[in-house]
Length: 139
Image (tube, rainbow, N blue to C red):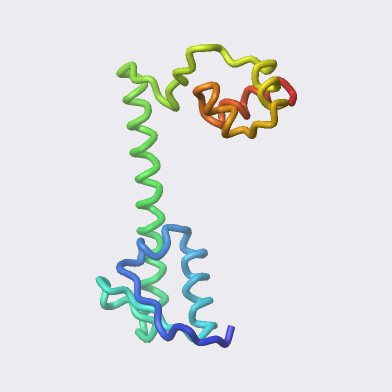
């Protein structure tokens, strides 16, 4: 990597750069160092590839970023549980296809030379629905 298209990577905050594990975040930054690319946080002035405490601060900030990722995941899961308890139906809504699609209908239209999009349009459903019916019926 000697193209030298970049001299420095400026990121807003470390947690915007990476929310991966400490080890993975440090690997990314080490790789930048290896390529001769400096890096710096815009909002965290002490986080700079030329600073003497960069490794210690990186470890702490990367750990915090990972903990935030875990917290977001936990809040999302708690919200889904709360929604289920409240009776909210989760997931993709059932299609509004008025006629139950049968494989025979799809294959008949397919033999007419139409593609999946045209079949879906003519049956008033999505391409995914057509593919799912075909897949579930072994075609």
